Image 1 (cartoon, rainbow, N blue to C red):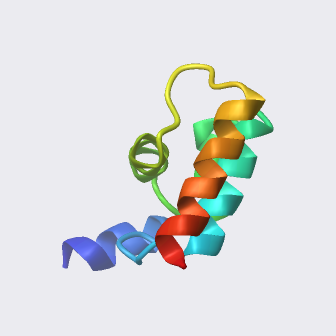
Image 2: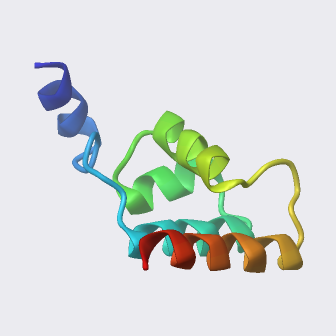
Length: 79
């Protein structure tokens, strides 16, 4: 029931992340989109976005080289 309620507001809540969505999330973060805007785009809650970014290694103000490294890690983990 909790999942159904969450999915009313955020349709992709509790769905697994894919390699493609991880890469798109990294790109959105790198472009400077807000967590709320990314939540709208990915149809997930702001907490889920923050959590996934942390899991992917995005911390305070990463630079372009850091994002490149993170994208390479995502690609390696899904290959």
